[in-house]
Image 1: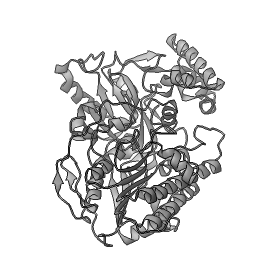
Image 2: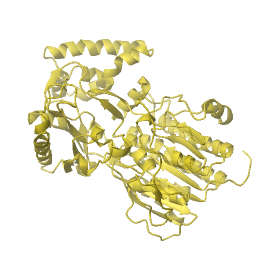
Image 3: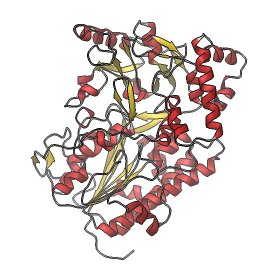
Image 4: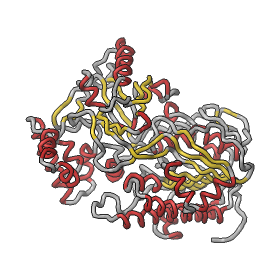
Length: 544
């Protein structure tokens, strides 16, 4: 790579799930010297995420500066009635930072941005990240092949994914390798396109917490690799301003709360034995066979169909599980049997017959089966508010076996979502207490269950740091929110924020005014119809 002066004015480094809980021990131990220098030389502090605090919705909020009621992505899944698909960039209905930069004649390089597939046609380069297929279309066309020719192997996802036989060391090595690929790709593309704006995201900082929860050695190894490659990017591109941001935090959870079981007890959810029910990996078995599944996958599909038939005559996996639990065999069997097989033999939510239900756990809320809106809606429109008020009261009263509230807050959706896409949100938002309770859609008898093993899930408090041009040590961050990142980035580029943004410019940056930008033109929502992507979401617990 040639050595020359670059024109990179602002670089955003995204660390998925980074938070003080994870970072402070690494900073104290000197394990991440590049991040330490950024935190020490500039300003740093907690960044309040949104509800829901999950990758697929939070990153679009961060890079559009708008709440999901405006940009339109509420989770990993998009729903059309009772049908669903995995979200992609066509679901993001507000301008991204790189689109606004393009509008002002600036060039951008975006590497591994979540929900950026298919990529927009902007001046610069986009290599999509999370929810894209493994070999995604990039911008400009042919860029992925060029990237691999120039910097070597480039993958979106770890090769250890889904491998039960993958060792801890193999997983760590793979995550470190992915960090190397992100850094190498950005350095090459920054040299090739000489952008004014850069966006570089690392997903492995989240993956390691889900796959190896609480493993301090793994955290140090993965963050150490990320830190090393961030350092190389900074040395090569020398940005005027660098911001380090996360979409949410992460931490251990203590309880599984089966919300639909609770709603069934209160007369809202009806169940069906067998069938497809709620979104789950078992609902895409036909995709798996169509795309060329191996014999083991096909065998699992046959087992699923057989167990689904058994469930319809009363032999559900709940009943089998109760017997196995009494014999001390439940956990060994669960480790060996795919979730889809278990789910096929379970009682599941009957959408059409239910008055309200949780359709996706990451939405953090309840959907009312409203007549005239849902295909088989049964709640009359004139009863909507009364039903919603009753749901809010009942969920607010939910307590754990120890008597603690399950939820910090249960409110109408308008409290968190506003804008032209808000009617796609849940009707009632339910925020778990401290996000220490894992919400699940499954119907498995009891309302509560302990984690099957030490497990982490998302929290609302992430991190933000800013250093270099225009940032002095000791300056105030104020009380930063996820929505503030995009307007602040625009300010560092001397560009006006959009009047549709919900966030403001953080105190360390000088605002450049506000303006109305042209309406976003996305066309039809497409969705990522990729079986591997759906399996990936299922393994990480985003799709149950």
